[in-house]
Length: 288
Image (cartoon, rainbow, N blue to C red; front, top):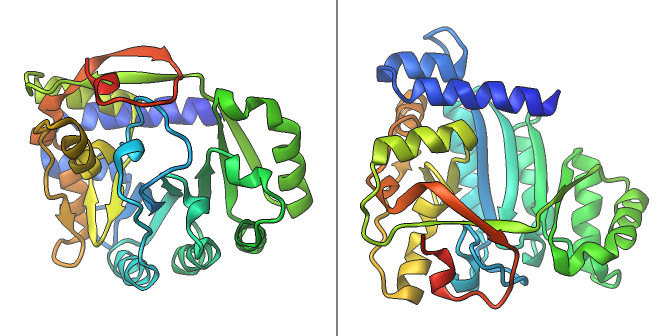
C-alpha cells in the first residue's frame, strides 16, 4: 500500500509540473485554496558529513564540511514552518549521518513538538548503531521511542552483515525500524549543464519529491542545496539556486517554487545510470 501511494503521489507531482502554478499548488496540496496549506514532505540534515564514503551520494557527503545543524536555528525554522503550514505530512531527519550529531535527541524532540501529527523518521546508515557504548545514540533512540519517531536504516553492503545487531538494538529500544536495501547509486551529474531542465524536472517528479530545509531556506532537492561541496572538490561549476526564504515567502510561494524547474536541473540527467555501491568516492564517480 505504501508503494502504491508513492506511485500515485509521484504521478501527481509529474502532472503538476506542467500545470499553471496556482493549479499545481492546489493539486499537490490537495486542499481548498484558503487556509494554511499542507507540505507533503521535508527533509533536513543534522550533519552534512558522513561516516560512510559512498560514491554517488546525492547529498555529496564525502566532500562536505564537518558541519552540524544549529539546534536553536532549526528550532526557529520549524516554528516558522508551523506558522505558514498547517502540517508537514512527512519529515525525515537526515545527513550525512544524523547520529553523528551529539544533539540528535534534542532535534528529534523539537521536530515532534513542532509537528505532532507528522510522520517523522530518522535516516541512518546504521554504523553508529553498532556501538552499544555510545551514549549519544542511546539518548537518540530513547527520544525517538518517546516521540514516536521511526528509524529508516539504509542497508549498504559494508553493514549488511550486521543486520541482526541493528534489528535487535532497535527492538530493545522500542523504535520502529524500516530497512531499505541499497546496493547501488546513480550517476546523474552533467557538468556542462546541457540537459533540458523541464524534461529533467518532469522525470525527477515522477520518481522523487524531496524538498530540503537548510538554514532557513527550502530547496527543491539535496543536489541543489549541497552542490557547493561537489564544486569545491571537483573544480566544477554545477549550478545551484538560492532556494526560497521561509521567513519572507508565504506557504503557497514555497509550494510554487517546489513545482517549477530550477536552473540547476540542467546539470542533472534524467537518464541516470546505475552502478554497484562502492566506497572511496572520487569526483568523477558523479559524472554522467
